[in-house]
Image (cartoon, rainbow, N blue to C red; front, side, top):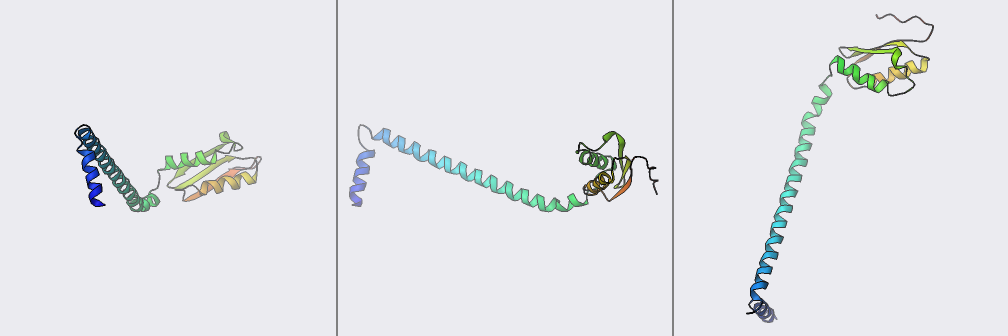
Length: 146
């Protein structure tokens, strides 16, 4: 059986009329498959290396993210962007500033539930160490900073 297969392959590839063409096609087909396999392997290697590199960097820099404290202006802007997302918040009547991680909320708001909501949202912002609530309701005097 093996001899018959080898004989057939020999006749197929060494045929005087079409053998050269068949050999060339077989060589080109085989080389193309080899090049494609090499490219797939290189792509898989790059993917694996970048994934591992990303995981390593995530672990290495995880501690840095927790430690980094934004400067006061950045912190105040961050709090403003979160607090003022709600359309019910009177943006023109509230002032927000930060000093060494302590955020000061000043101004007049319509009801106590909004005061509580603003204080809660502000305290949830990463980088806020403490919230000084100087907000007041209409008709009340503004609280004094201690």
